Length: 233
Image (cartoon, rainbow, N blue to C red; front, side):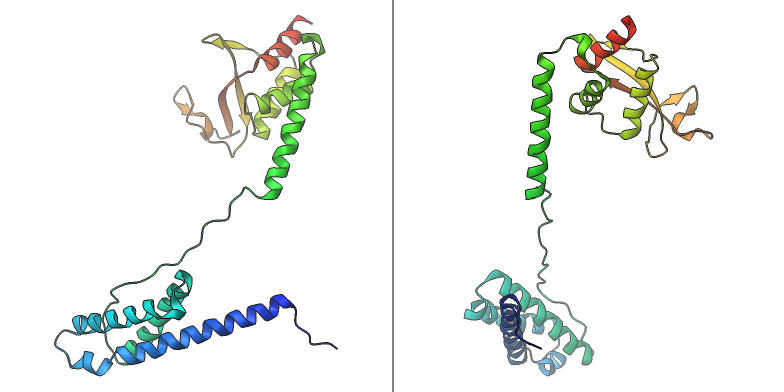
């Protein structure tokens, strides 16, 4: 059976070995510049330690092996842990003049898959919009209303979409106007949807039997046309 390692594994081992050498050098610098006996003998432990630590940090930061920010910060943090262990062994209670907090950027959601999916959705939307331009009000379908609610009215909650489409299919959807814009009021059975709307003195979302949402949604012209078509027919 072959024990050959992949190139990636070999490179990782080499990186780990180089990092361990840097850590060893950082520990040697601690041993060279931090004299724990002198700290214990001094009148001001913290002041004595701070002076020693400044010399250590200067030599660490100017050493050719730690010119890279990541290499310096990881070695510095390793030295802090090493020094802290030594101080605990000798019952020395003092703080470090500086600590380095390492963090990485959160992964971006804008991955290649995200861009690809977005392009597919955009292509679909443009094709659908182009087809709508050639249609009349009578040609509009329930599917067009569904897509218009998503793309034009930004209704993305499944339970809200279902409630609107059910009212439309039952021919009981009432459209009002606010500042000349079509608007509807929807009550949704959805326990995950929080609302501060009150009916009388009782909060709707605190209903014992059903968890309901009372929400106003602005309609796009397409959705409005379909409802008018339904009312006329």
